[in-house]
Image 1 (cartoon, rainbow, N blue to C red):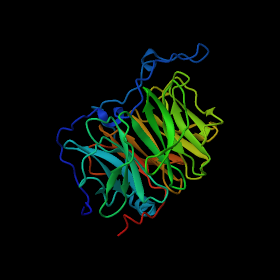
Image 2 (cartoon, helix red, strand yellow):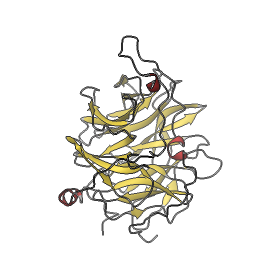
Image 3 (tube, helix red, strand yellow):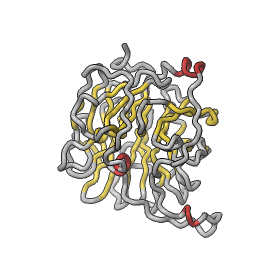
Image 4 (cartoon, rainbow, N blue to C red):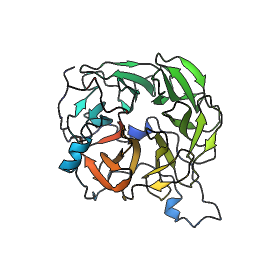
Length: 352
């Protein structure tokens, strides 16, 4: 496939507008009342947090300064998913907003979403729908001038939320077996090597630690979606968050010291970070719009996330140590979301 240059999507109606998160999302969040000893929570905040519709009153957003653009231009690539004309494809963009490319636009439409990089950035794993018999399966995409994609799971239910091991040889993911969702480890051929969890509640969204020793994930085993951590054999389970609102989408900083995540604990979706033991929780965004799905830059200085603050899902970047510094990453798409920053600054398959 010829490499696509910057492409501006046509402003046409999008098909299956509500499926981008629902496709592999866990079942509806149960209503969780706050503890009687906690501060009162407004009634409007005790309901199920769900992705919001595009805001009718978009917020003003900052753009990247020329000085900062030069500073971050070589900090790898960001992959994301975008929808247009009945397709949902995997895209990449440099963090300064240049060189937008469709990676799957010339391939069969698998409605790809939630892409993640392999440690050397030679592969992208993503969720896709191969045919009408499958709800969601995991695909691999080689990062090259002429990409190819191939399916590695064939379960009739849900196989999704992939995350590579640091050696790039295994993938932890969520699978729905017998009506329940648990975490498994497989090789790159799709062979199951280990079942990590076996719990009647939903376990999902795993992320492998940079040192290869731990896996952070989301679970509803205590009645509300919270973030947990465990060893790569499923042992030493520890709950990291405890709030009445949804805590999910955890991702590791490159040094393994921090975990970024999305939380609805304030009644709105915002980006937070915490230490790997659950301490030192810090809120990084305070927009009235939905902010979510954070991932770190390869140097650990920045976090990319999606937000509805423009009126539709778009990509944004913030500086972790100076979160007031935030800007819109213009992709040319009217609907870009679920970003993931490459773990390395140089991606050979994408460099000229």
